[in-house]
Image 1: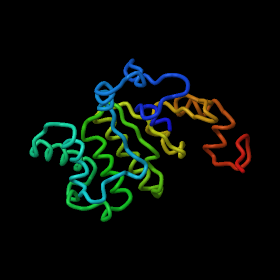
Image 2: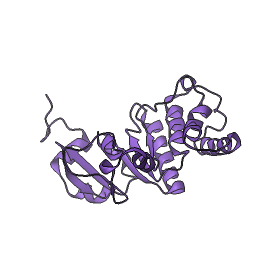
Image 3: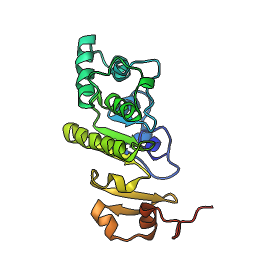
Image 4: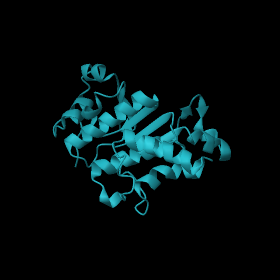
Length: 207
């Protein structure tokens, strides 16, 4: 829901969403299309096209949104696949990939347009702890390489402590805790602490 608001798919009932000083919800048509070009999105399930190879999945945004010729597209696609450790897997289809490989292919597609803002929707969901950490390592490496602004939405908060600069927790529609990974833990917010530990007892009760 938060990410949909950020890219202007949903209008907020209250407040505004500013991207580089511009209220995205005030934009229409070509202006909205242009500002959305700044975004890359890693969807929770990858959202790869099953009927496309890995190569064609990654090439898709370039073919749809740029005037690059096929040689330029090939160079850009292979560059991203190499960074994702998929240089020799471009001919494969999503069904032939492991969960971690699908996530990396989706990440390559999200980055191939070199966005200035990256949105990550539950990037480690459905992955075992080792593969999940590998994906976070790739995200960190991509951030260092491309210098994008990244927003990660996750329920596995403790896992992202090592790669983020700021954390905000939303509860009941409000930000109840915010700070650096070290600072937010020092706040000892009971809801945040319970959520991170996964305790069944505390201020948050589920029916």
